[in-house]
Length: 374
Figure 1 (tube, rainbow, N blue to C red):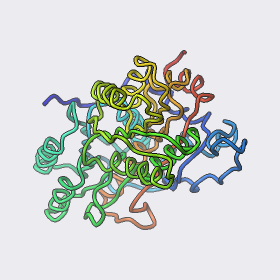
Figure 2: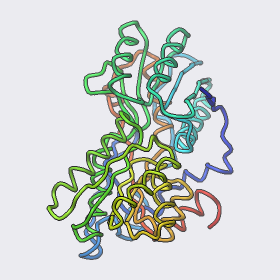
Figure 3: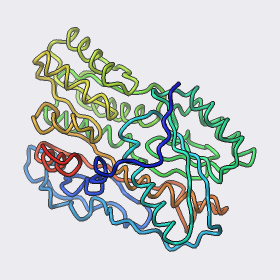
């Protein structure tokens, strides 16, 4: 299976991610390193709209701080070598890599050289991830980090690696199963809430009645499964709403498009679609436009095409994760773990990173900041 090893990423394309949330409207919990926790909730600007539609300025300062500075920690060595593997080659993890590169640069300024492998398959596979982790364990890495592809398959392997003396952490969007022996996790700890928040916005938009489909993503991926469960539990609260289809698109735009076309064929009166990863909002939107469906789409993250659909009103809202902070904090925590530290005063067992829900009024600025133009 093809792999990609990221050492440098063109900043002209993705560096503006550092300004990603300057026009954000609603933020999930945040207890990342060097941050003060969640922003205070604000009152709804209109009685018929969710809190997420408040003015951009209301959360601009508190949504996220991309002016990252390393914590006041003195590394015990002047050189570290890490191994990171994640679910699949995708622009979402390129944004995470930018945060890693910034932390790497700041450590180098302090005289600490950090090198790392950053590799993933072309399509998500727990079997592929298993082989990568076993191969990494045979090398002399200071820390092994993994964005878990399937918690049932990968968690036992992580426990085996820890028992064998490896220093293992998880990062990005998917932690290991509860009770795992991994040392710490840096990433999104509120995937269930993200799915529930997006679905609540959809339900309110639909006046709490109608037929809804859920596109999950990769089977077994904790982040995708948790968002889908948050969506399903939210819909279950409303007696006039019904889930008519739940499908796995394996984080593929093309498969999400095909699945949405079939769902719309089977349910021409479909009212809404909940999309649980970065790829499926694009596939779903393509299908909705092609079929001239009126289905309302909510989904995840900052894909350029998805943001254009958001700007056009095809997508109602997108939950955008703070990838840059995930990458930066992952490197910081990896250094501390490599030095033999455990979760506590230096870093938490789970470093929470933020998710912000964007609406149509945010789309134009996001496109300009992330991709340079409209």
